[in-house]
Length: 558
Image (cartoon, rainbow, N blue to C red; front, side):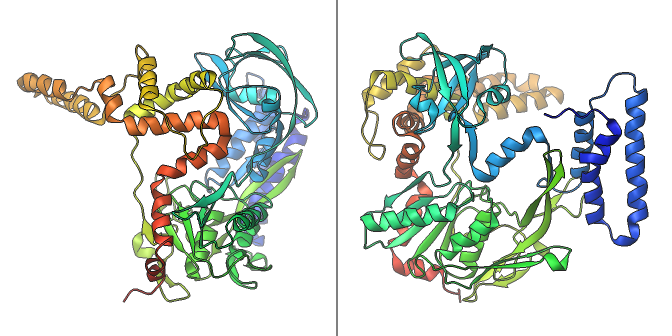
């Protein structure tokens, strides 16, 4: 981090540029006096603080706090990115960073290796999930935060980092010198053939990073080589937060003709409004297409799903998408700082904007709300089907979100799935392929025995409701009259951990098997395993394998 000594110079530098830029963009030309006055007040106030405040002030921290507070009045996507945050920002945009390719997690104030990425420097150096990391570059890690450890591990590709590791398999402490590499987390972690006849191309896209459309096209080409008589495509955009708008257009271009309008962006400066059309040759404009979305599918994911829906090119399956219809642009501020700000809204081919939250109208308490149903407008797809603005992309086929048991959540939070996967991997040099791996009943019983004596206590929703009822009854002075009946009811609903483990055996087994599979086949294995019991994927397969039902969903309802 560069040292910024003169306070006034700092103000007229990065912070002042940020403030000035925002005011200039937000106000018409005739309000320049108001802008100048407020900037002068801001700079003078800061100099007075620096001169007279009882304790020393930290210029960078104080100004960043002020900028962040100012931006909170706008929307959550308009952010000040300081020099120290640039690397994390670049990773979010590109999926690349310099490091060793492993995650870390904390347990009981100690640090352990979490996931190890396939073909990463960490894997090549022999790091295992579950290894305890004692020190990095001679700095003892006990008590350090995960963010602090991340800073120590990241660095320019080609540089080295020394680590002292306690091997989870043999218990020996060893020193490792690892050469950092350029770590790229692929936006297409898995692609494969699914369905009864293995003739549906499944592609998972996790983020719209540079060249992700090329990765999707290459995946589809590879699958078609394996299965020339490919019948349909399933594109999985669940939990995809978005990314580059150009890449969203290119993804649409895989399935629609060249020259098709995909999205229009409109802001307050008419000269900057823009239309985005497909430019290249499509991959296939006729093959049946389904797209999976959920409530965490946002931005560029909604451009793709909304456009495909508007053009009646495919069906959308899952939950209503997030509803982010805003476009961000990044502006340089100097001193290697940047401003990411919302500059426009985007509109799909039907003319709708799917933005769900109205940030321009705040309530008296400063909170914002979703656009009211009465304000949502009706638009029409190419075939004449009704679609609404202001609420994300509404799927043609809805699926319900699965509720995970308290038991499974507790075992996950306590890292018991992770820890037992380490035990299992130590005892089994190899396992069946990810798509077919399954624990035997005896192996599950071994896990249940391993859990004995471990703390994974929790309260069910029923127990929590009874606790709440007891508090209310006590406050209202009814409890003494019903405490006998209450104790009886409490006894009846009290859960037994061993019984719960059997009751939720299928769910617990799923989480455990997924964790075990990841030790041998990494993220691609975890995804391949999960597809077997994925209800949304199975629903999509059912529809894609029934052409009549698929086509009916694309017709105007009479």
